Image (cartoon, rainbow, N blue to C red; front, side, top):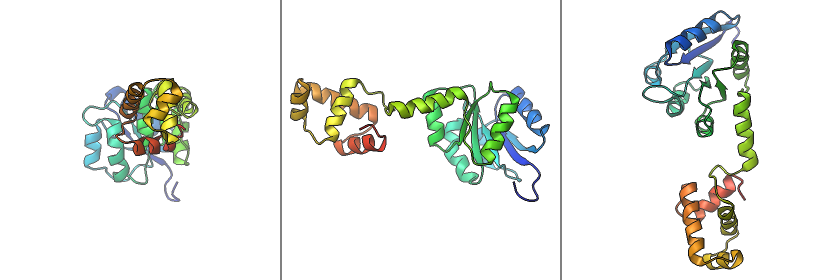
Length: 211
């Protein structure tokens, strides 16, 4: 906190009026915190943020118009010194990882106790990345699985051999299947990993520590 700033400045983007009012009252009534602005849509917030700018932004995912996930890159550009904390009821793995990839520093479910929310805001302000326990388990699980693309066991075997430099005939021979079967597996791998060439699939597999 800056020397002359007695509070952690917080902004909220939440379309539910009741939740927005509750969050504002909770934060404003807690020592050391102050809500400096609030919005019901990301589009409204992106038009102009009034000063003082927030230290921490609480962002809902399911917003009308531009969603919270979609707005993250723009909000980070508009507020480069603000830490963005997702606060939502949605714990979809895809949305969790997309939020983190797009620049969120934490991900909390709205069912958390008020004290946990305030603790998390302070943690974010101090450089931490708080997550609800169920969200943290999803993140840990993703690192353990090391397969964000949900390849089948056979597709993983084909991918490994692609990364080893084997051609289709060699892969077919080693896996005791036809070349056409190998081609079908490679097509599925390309579609799941959103690539078009062997070079791209190998690069992506190595980057994601899949091989």
